[in-house]
Amino acid sequence: MLLTGRLCLLRLHSPIPCPFLPFLYSRRIFLHTIPAAKSQLKPSATETKISQPSSSQFESIRPSLFVPPGLERDDVTVDMVLPWSNIVVGPYAGDAQVNQVEFIKSSVKMKDCPRDQFPEFAVIGRSNVGKSSLINRLVKRKEIALTSKNPGKTQLINHFLINKSWYIVDLPGYGFATASKSARMDWFSFTKGFFLNRDTLVGVLLLIDATVPLQKIDLDCANWLGRNNIGMTLVFTKCDKIKGGKGTRPDANIRAFQDLLKQFYKEPLPWIMTSSLTGLSRDDLLLHMSQLRNYWDI
Image: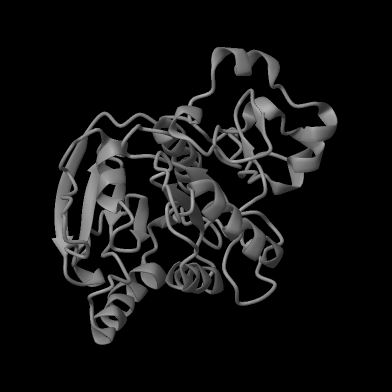
């Protein structure tokens, strides 16, 4: 059954896209700041024991959590929040393991896509955001989605069938710097029909490179999705990396998204930090996808 409004948890106040939220969470750790070093991405046993938030601290961040269907915000406890995200695990979460993956087909147009009515998650982002690497990490197959040293090689809609029951859909990356303006416009025309007319679309994983400052093209994409009531999860990639010298760190870049965008939505969007290199949040992202998928399927 098609979820009403496609998991429409977005409520726009203005035509600016989604916010990031001012805190990170762990199942047992309360973090006022985003981890700045690779060594900090996995909490120590000592931190796990002593860093439980107080009741007042958790109450202050409760409004910023993404609460999935089947739960009331007042019923959420700190142990229900996925690490490195604002995502609460609800009653529809489950069946999150990837036991089988099969490449089904590449489609030139939306009308050529599979028509078997399995639920789908579309994966999009800038051409060098690490889209193929994330897909490979999610399914634990090194080259199921081909990676390239030349970003922008994905030019088709690629369907990967998971456990013979749902799809990950790899869409062409947008905004590659060497592409012509007409080519970048073609990306929009190419994918617009998929987003607007695909009844099996559960939601979109919008990938954002945490190692670079805020990009207008990412905002434009999120803005368009929000305007069209297409549910999205914001997936920060490359969160294991730190730039030295004049480069900005992932924590600073993510915080910039938070500061700029948090005022524009009534309800918080789900977001999560990931690393295809270390596997950060791989299982938790799949768990989040499972609760959206299972609710869509009722």
